[in-house]
Image (tube, rainbow, N blue to C red):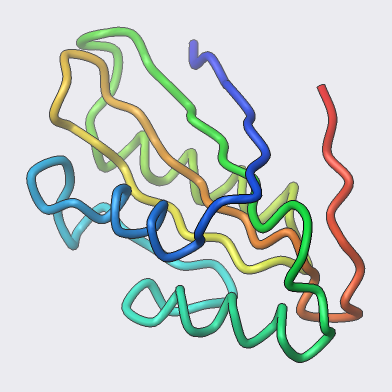
Length: 126
């Protein structure tokens, strides 16, 4: 069973996306974008923020979904992360990257704090 940690950040979208896309931690088979291209996620997320003039405050939400060592394959973990993104963040761009560099497989979901549909900020709490 997965454990989930959720963080909100006022940090740089570019920096967090560069971290989660690190080729030493993941590969192209286990990287996806929901409502954005994983190849252009930084630009697309920032475009949405600028479109609605919502560039201040929380810039993204970061979910880390971790599995026990040996519990799951990277591909299956990635599918579960993609399903979570599709069900929980319908109107937000989400980058999903599965890391396999540790004993435990884990997903990183980077969620735009601004909805591409209406410009509302995502309110997320525990």
